[in-house]
Image 1 (cartoon, rainbow, N blue to C red):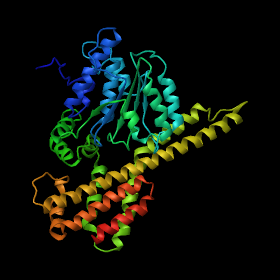
Image 2: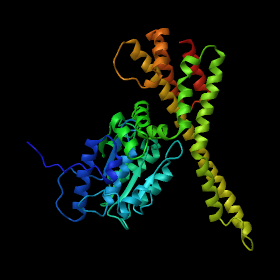
Image 3: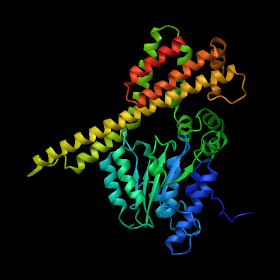
Image 4: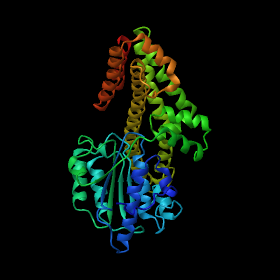
Amino acid sequence: MQTDAPEQPKTGVWAEVVGQPDAVQTLFAAVRAAHLQVRGEPVPPGSMTHAWLFTGPPGSGRSTAARAFAAALQCSDPEQPGCGHCSACRTVLHGTHADVRLVVPEGLSISVAEMRALVQAAARRPTTGQWRIVLIEDSDRLTEGAANALLKAVEEPPPRTVFLLCAPSDHPEDVSVTIRSRCRVVQLRTPLSGAIAEVLHERDGVDAELAQWAASVCGGHIGRARRLATDEEVRERRESVLRIPLGLRRFSDVFTAATGLVKLAETEAVTANEDRNEVEKEELKTAMGAGGTGKGTAAATRGANAALKELEKRQKSRATRSQRDALDLALVDLAGFYRDVLVTRAGSTAPLNHPDFERSVAKAAAEWTSESALRRLDAVLECREALTQNVKPIIAVEAMLAVLYTG
């Protein structure tokens, strides 16, 4: 029996959700129901709920889908919610809508104090929009106390508040099972390379051949594909990482490669945050009356210094997270290389993660046994796990590279 499902939109905010037709159809149906609910009209049962959990592999576009959903909920176009042109859509996508609270953790965790303040704000009625929306990226970074504070709000939500959570997976260790049980899960998948290449070429203006290459080596990570296609330094960093497996000829190369890999992550973290850090410092100094003269300036200067120290503390935490993320991305590339070696040795026709390094993969497959390649792959995965346990990066990387050398 056929059902009258709303036609899936391909324009407006939904065009940003790449390669996720099933998820978009689910979200669009919920938006239609939400607009009916606001107007007091009958709503199809189960189509709209107050809490959503967006899950999927890294790069699948969890936060992009959540932002598109939030924009469509606030959209002022009743015929095509999520038009992308109205003021509500634009302000939500830019993070400036008064009724949408966006939480992007800049440190390694989300504190209970931050979550309590957020829950209090979420209890208020919307001011300019149709809904009060709380969007939490990387909700797997919630501390236990923060998760408990959020749980209370999700259990007894205000009538016009929607919670949107994003997490790498729906495993109980990532997001509290009590929170998951109260959310409707939207499972995203890894986008196909063809869909990624099409977006890079048609919307970002990337050369078709370069777009196809970036899509083939990004591991289904849309943001990574865009950076690879538009930034030569990113391409060079990837190549330097993928030269490591065959570059370990002497044991001394282990320490050289470890230092280089950690510095590579540090450099990427600095590059990603440098401009933003300076802008934040200047804005804070201006707000605190830096350079002022006259009565009261001494007290203002003391207050500015205290605020500046707090800002520097947050920036340091953000830099640590950026470095860990950059290093983890390098490890994912390494893991992909050893996976390609195993695929080649098995004679499989499965596509390679790094097709542009096919010759290096074939050389490694001819020199190593499958057991040796598997031990190397395990070492990379163990290093990733060690970094999540706050092991010092240089120690974790040196231990990994020692195994990569010996096999």
